[in-house]
Image (cartoon, rainbow, N blue to C red):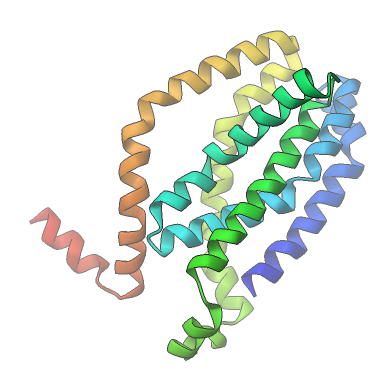
Amino acid sequence: KSLTVMISLGVIVTLIFYFSSDYIATTILKKPYLAVHLRYISIGVIPMALYFLFSEGLRGLKKIKEHTIVQNPSRFFISMVLILVAIYVVNDKINPSLIFSISIILTMVLSIFYWQKFFSAKNEIEKNAEATNVTYSEIFKLSVPLLLASSTSFMVSWTDTIVLTIYRSDEEVAIYNTAMKFSTFVKLSLMAINSIAAPKFVELFSTKKLRFKIVKICC
């Protein structure tokens, strides 16, 4: 059911983003040549949502190595390989937005492969019959607060880049984003701890033991 909701909303967002790309590029960003890039990026909306879903599923299964591979390095590594192939093998200037969308699709395939490898839906449902009784209202009740939190975090992390895109040149935006990427090295330790701790909190929450553990830690 979660997959059905995600794909349905993803199709809607993709169509809106694709057909409004000219308006966004011309009116909001004031750079009409970005319209083609926005169309290519819209192709990756559903694959990105799916690979994030399967990636978090892998973390829930405590497959931290596979989760980490799918979450970040894979799509950037695939993009780098495709760019090098385009430059030195094909000897052609391929749209970088198209390359990024292709890397997202390949990362989604990788995440599905890992998910099929470590998870048997039939066996899990037989072990836990309650999984078949989850309603759409329960899914929305749980996911909407997470959606609001994630949307706020997304807006905070991307507002600076969007504003710079409107008022500054592409070269300056690229330099700023590169500097920001290097600054994320500071968060490596936090991200490493979170990758291990997050599944534990999810497990404790689902088994109603979260409050007891927090009290135990605090005391």
